[in-house]
Length: 216
Ligand SMILES: [Zn+2]
Image (cartoon, rainbow, N blue to C red; front, side):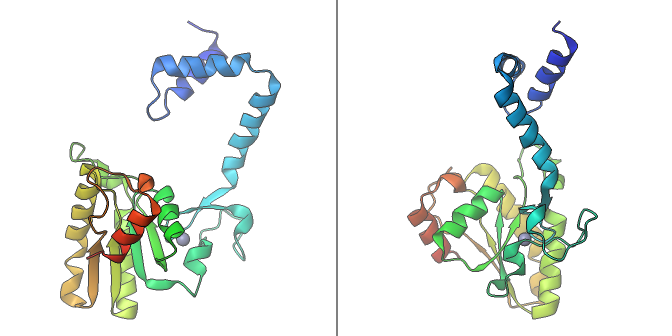
């Protein structure tokens, strides 16, 4: 057994996704051997996490400094710059697995709508996985949008992987009943320009552009 503080650190690293006990131990010993510089940078980095908020609409991360006109008390009404931007098309919502996918789409500069970050994917092997995603929020967001505008487009921009496809199908199934009441509601999926099994964040810009343009 290692000294308690070291063991604590090992246990913490072992909680990281994809990090096993051996690797966790290597990380902890690596930090131990560093002289103060890196350790204090780490401390600062971790302390900075408390300044990160989430947009209540799209679940994108935002720095608390950039919140204009929000209260000091944890900001229940926090919206990100995109969701606040009147020039964006608020009637089009691209559903992505994670925030980096949103940035990939933004880089193409051809999508002018808003986003909805799911914070993961549905795993066909894990029946609990849908509960961990922002699906309920998506449903109520789209419902409100339709009640307000009468029309909307949801673009299922998940990866071309088994999980990405399962997630898209699942969302399609929970949103499709809204079409009965709102015939102008469209659910589209990125075109298959994305090669099978490819994650959105690794798609090059041109491929992603054509997948967006040819969505159906
Ligand atoms: Zn937002």
